Length: 297
Image 1 (tube, rainbow, N blue to C red):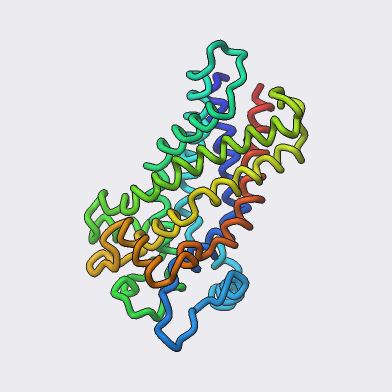
Image 2 (cartoon, rainbow, N blue to C red; image 1 turned 90 degrees about the horizontal axis):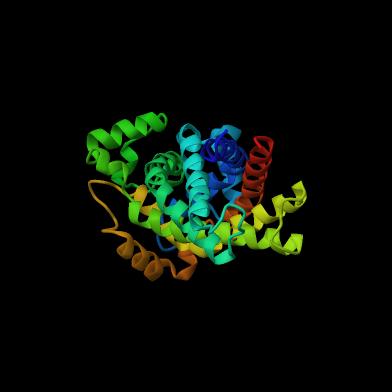
């Protein structure tokens, strides 16, 4: 099996592991990000992550934590296959000879290139997912968006294609998606390789055990979100914004208005669930990737 096929297979399995472990945390993150700012004298719908979990389970059952999972599950194969394959091909391109070990700076470049490539898959997938996840959080805000109730990811896609500008509507939020994926993946893969080398005591990391790989993957995931979290908030609010009567004119406007009305704190809504998700989800992803890649030879 060639390197591309190995990366495609291992990336797919790694992505599936990441999704199963991390999706409930992601649902809570999006709910906190997208809930409307309360009017003066009113309290927010969710006071925090734990409150959001309790209210989601009470209103929708445990399955509510997996709302919107259909969209990323349907594309997780393509997303992670592209991510790890582009990263692998960039590694090959940057090596002077097949046996060379890349520097951490070169790994950062590989991650950035991989992030750019997956942005075009991530944007429409995230839009479908965020619309489904945010429905209950936005309920009662009185915005026109809430007149639309989605039955599932395909229903969201049909609505967007029919009523929100066709294919272009599925790529709403592409700029902040790229601004998240490029630096985020640069940081993630750079930290992943740096941590592995630190644990191994050198550049040969082939002998690392599962615990070391999981620790490296967990730290790498945390690095991703620490690098780009405000950008993710901007992306989420744009993707759930009303098409006919938008609250925000674009990414910069969304950033400025969130900061003006809610302060810096508003740009970190849902940060706790994102971080709680990133460590176990990315630990599972990288472990599954490495084990599958090793098994394939």
